[in-house]
Amino acid sequence: MTTLRKQQVEQYNQLRHVFMLSAWGFVIGIASFLFLYVGHLLDNLLGTAPNFMLGLFFLALVTTIGRLYQEAWSKKKDV
Image (cartoon, rainbow, N blue to C red; front, top):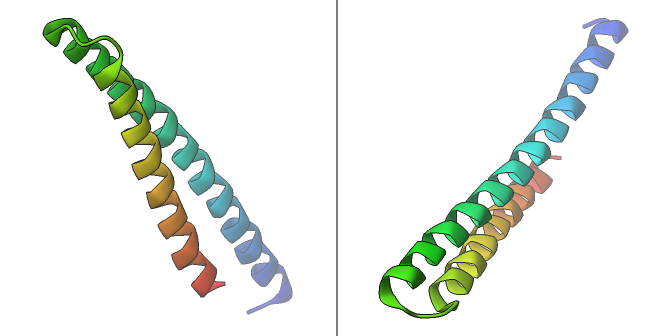
């Protein structure tokens, strides 16, 4: 491969990592708000104050951040 082609491939790989991180940010935000909303609906239905709302919110945060950590750890081995 030519030097120019190698530089283009490296730029593409860097951009791919940036897009992956931004996608994970989107997933964390959407999952958190979705679980927060479902928890709010369950709390209204069952009459339990903020129990399900907070529980599901933290569950979403922990699971999505855990998956992000696993993804980053597997990518670290490739680098």
